[in-house]
Length: 271
Ligand SMILES: Nc1ncnc2c1ncn2[C@@H]1O[C@H](COP(=O)(O)OP(=O)(O)OP(=O)(O)O)[C@@H](O)[C@H]1O
Ligand SMILES: [Mg+2]
Image 1 (cartoon, rainbow, N blue to C red):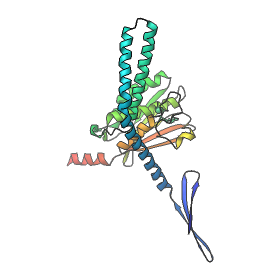
Image 2: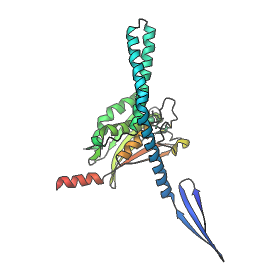
Image 3: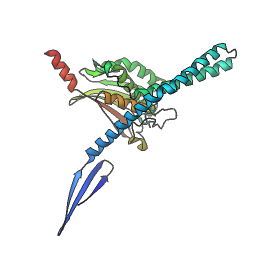
């Protein structure tokens, strides 16, 4: 017996088994697309886990010297008479703050903040963060629109969901041309609450599509490539499915939160 794996158009993978016998050959074809997708998802999760552990390890080593340098820069800044020097110090301090923010983002890849989850309505979190999204959009002459359906409450970590929303909306705005729109939509689908963020960009570059969620993967000059890795981590911690559909007319990111838990809570409340 021999077997071979065949990949058709990247999306379907089949395993062909052939059993030769005296008068010919019998061939079995098995669709293993689903298994392969699951294996790839697992690999991604393992990679994130490893990165989280590394990040936790280096955080102190890198942060302490940075904080010391920042402190001395502040002292020098306050003693400096020259306006030009003060300006340079300001720049150095803000660059140090930026480095610190990147480390914080990187560390949040691993942080499991399960304690701070509450039963919340996703729409309320979106409404609270909406003014910030609108301000972002306004600054670049674009628009963010809401289309929020009726939703039950879910067990959510508000600060993480805010971060997820900001990351996805910012990516959407960065991809969308001027005068374009990014839409935040929520709806019930089967036993999930779906959050969909749709932009009017030109789609995720093909070389990035298969690697979405890899930390530090970016095509932007000033991007860190952490936004999606963080967002996928947040979705995983909420047991939510993270998905996207992309093409020439734009990209939609979907985060599907399972409802089962929310329904059970409701039932328990009504007992
Ligand atoms: N809505 C989108 N449309 C097109 N490409 C996208 C979109 N969202 C993400 N990408 C692609 O995926 C890459 C990774 O995105 P990610 O948000 O992780 O990092 P980033 O936006 O480059 O940097 P940052 O850390 O500042 O978010 C982007 O550089 C871009 O190439
Ligand atoms: Mg981003």
